[in-house]
Structures are given as structure tokens and as C-alpha cells.
Image (cartoon, rainbow, N blue to C red; front, top):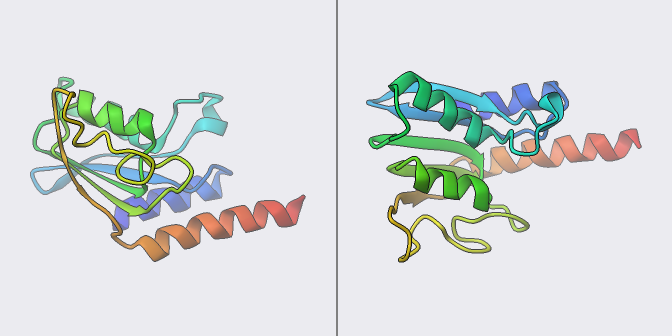
Length: 145
């Protein structure tokens, strides 16, 4: 989670919402990313999707079995669904997202009985630190306005 938080800090420094993600396989980080929606002008450039895409490139295929995604904010429905499609084994996230989280808050795609893959979820890892990054970022935005 430390590396995901570092990615979130990089995002904030670049004017992006501070969300970072890393993908771990075999005990080592194989991909890392942060939100790039503003930088890329891409509505789906979420940290999780970018990290999953890089992990697939590193692994040489779309099946990311044996991988864990660490992300600073509870994934949205799109990202939670991408983890199903990528066959991720586990997702570890920092703070919950009351407006968009889909690994327990608004719904839960990780264990949906009608989907063809399920994955474990660990919530709340370094949640206070992840939440403070988000609060600080949005406070600074409001103060600039």
C-alpha cells in the first residue's frame, strides 16, 4: 500500500485526483499507476485500469491470476468489474468511497454470484492516510476557487 500511496501523491502533484494503484505478483510489484483522467483527457484512465493494463503487458496476457491490486480508494464499478475480467486474486484498498465504491459500499462486484470470477477483498488498509490525501487535495482545489 505504501507504493500505491506514493502513486497517489504523484497524481496530486500533477493535478490529478490522488488515487494510486499497484499490482503485485509473486511478492513483487509488476505495475504501478495513478489517475490520469485530466492528463490524458480519458474518462477511464483510473489508476486501477492503468495498473491492470500494465500488469497484463508485463505478464504477457490478460489473465492476472495470482495478482493482488493495491489501491488507495475503493474501486468504482468499472474498476471492480475489470478485476473480475482480469481474474485478479485479491484487491486491497485504503479508504471507502461512499459515492462510487463497488467493493462493498454501493454494491459488490468482487463476489457477485452470477459473475464467472470472484476475488478476495481487504478494506481499510492505511485508510486514514489515503482519505487525508483526498481531503487535502479537494480542500486545496476549493481554496483556489
